[in-house]
Image: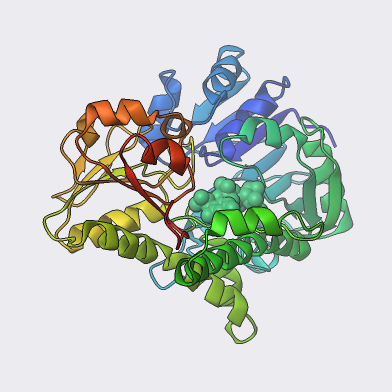
Length: 427
Ligand code: SAJ
């Protein structure tokens, strides 16, 4: 199958890099987003998200004239849907964006076209939700046009490299659709392209992230056990991981991001009677911010009125993404308890936080007048902080490290008292 023009719906963390990468291969791409702020920002040469290398990639695509930005689709050879699939408060998948993207394609789809869904979705979404919507065009899915599911599996922070190098899964609603999908990704993918059916491809994606969530949950539970039994979980994990068949992940303040903290719920929602382990893992990880707050309370003695500085707000190191970040939960539990919270997040200039929470413009401002400093996110710039620098900029000597980011001996010899998550014995 030949692709002269491709329409990418959704210009977020996945859609924008994908659209730009394809355009940079010389194919005409229409990038579509329903958010006028995103459309305007991109058209004016700006960027609405932070991802290493993305600015250069997008600018090259726009400058070449191969990428154009629009607020609605147009006729094309292929349509890629890369819109968000969040969940509602009750943990049910919110499929409105997928449905409206599919609806938006209906007037433009033509015989011989290919439609690919990339958004992470509950099992059978391609068959039971997307196919019937597209069939409103009068064309038959799988017969008159190809339809496939291909999950994005790139790691935020590494998106541009992984987009090209990772193995790709293409699940077609029939073999011809999988073949058409393979031809599309062959435009830019250097990884292996594996063909299967659409529901298997949906499950593969959910299984990958659920597997990781469950494994992080066990690491978090180990950190609680370590605390209780007076050992250092980080030391114990490092030793256990020398076993050739053991690879325990890292405990921390919880699991955030738009993927791992969301996707397992799609399986729990789809089959609650047979997913007790997946459900419990989610609850363990979601309760980890409370474990962090309990640790802060032990250090601060009294949360009410105590000045606490939190370093980092994003869901993981060196990204600006705060979606589902456990750090936000730590902020709100502390603020609720009457703690005077100051946050410093180097990747964010503005964040909507509770009224009494201060977002400091710089590290110096954040630490100047505080009682406890808490390392919540292992941003490189925090890990590189020297104990002597901190000692010179604050009178606070109480540190809480939730990510094993600071080597205790260096800090204690400079006069700090350091409390680490998952460490029941003090340095
Ligand atoms: N985390 C831990 N301990 C660990 C590893 C991670 O607490 O040992 C936490 C992180 O701090 C973060 C969360 O888990 O809050 C998720 O971070 P992550 O780096 O594990 O994953 P994501 O959400 O950035 O990206 C994942 C990836 N999936 C897998 O590694 C199986 C990525 O490949 C997917 O494309 C992405 O989800 C997605 O879009 O689904």
